[in-house]
Image 1 (tube, one colour):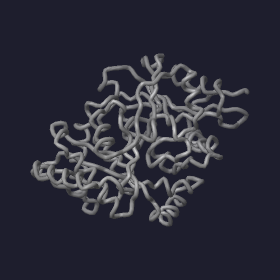
Image 2: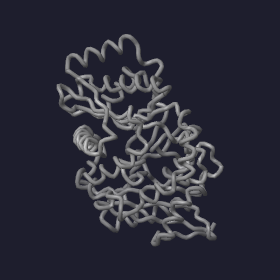
Image 3: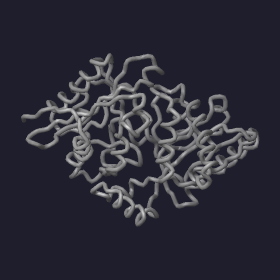
Length: 375
C-alpha cells in the first residue's frame, strides 16, 4: 500500500485529524465517539493553557486521499523540568492494522522529538498524564468510561513490534456499591471521623466566589498529594482552572467534596457520572446530539468514575481515604448508582491498591499501559 506522512498545518488539517478517528472505529460497538467540539478545544494551542509550556506537532498518514493513521509528537517542558529528563511523548495515535504505516508514524514522531533534544519517546498521552492516557490492554468488549481511553487490541502489536517496551501499567478497579457498606466498614469510618475530627463538605458549585475558593483548595491538595507519583507533573493555575471549568459542566455535585480535619482541608474527592453510557449513542460526535442523549438517558447511568481521590501526605495514614470512599458509596446508593470505577491507579501505588482491594473489595478489571522507547 502506498501512503505518505504529512504534518498538520492548517485548521482544515486539524479537523481532518479529529474527524479521522471515525475511520478506525466505525464498526466497533464498544467505541464511544468523542464530541468534536471538545477535541477542538483540547487541541487548540492558543486557548488550552497546556500549550503554554508544551509544543505539539500532529501528523497524518494518507493513502489515496484517505487517512490511514495519525499521531501527535509532544514535548512537555514542565515534565522534563520536574523529572530532569528528556522525554518526549506521542499521543492521539490511530492506525489501520498495518505495521508499515504504524512504523512510519512512530518514525516521524520520534524524529521530530529527537531533533528537539529528546532521548526517549513515551506514550500514549493525549496530550499529557493529566488527560486521557495509556493504551488499553484488555477488556476490549467494554466501552471506556468517561475520560478514559479505548483502542483496538491490535494496537498492542503495532506498538510493541516497533520496539516500545512497558514503562508503567495503570489499573482501573471495578467497585460494587451494594456490597461495600458492611457494618464493620460503617463503624470503622465513624471511628476515624471521631478520632481526627473529620468532616465532609460539598464543593459549592452555585456561588462563583466560593467555587473559586474550593478550586484553589483542591488545587493545593492535588499538587501536594500526587507530587511523589511516577510521571506526575503539577498543573499550572491556568490548567487547573481550565479543567475545573470543563468538569463543572458535567459534575454531579454529590460526588465532589472536601475532607477537613479540625476545620482544615486534608483531602478531596471527585467522581463523575459515566456519561459515556449516553455518548456511546452519539455516533456523529455533535454537541447537540450529545446533549440530547444526555437529557434522555442520564437517569439510566449506573456507574460513577472516581477520577480523583487525594489526601495530603501527612494525613495519608489516618484513614481519611476510607471515609471518602464511604461517602462515595453512600451517596452513590442514594442516587441508584450500582458501580464505581476507580481509575487510574499506578500499578506500584501500594497504598491505593491496598485500600481498593482490602478495604473496598475492588477488582482490577482494566489495564492501561504507557510505553517507552529510546530514540
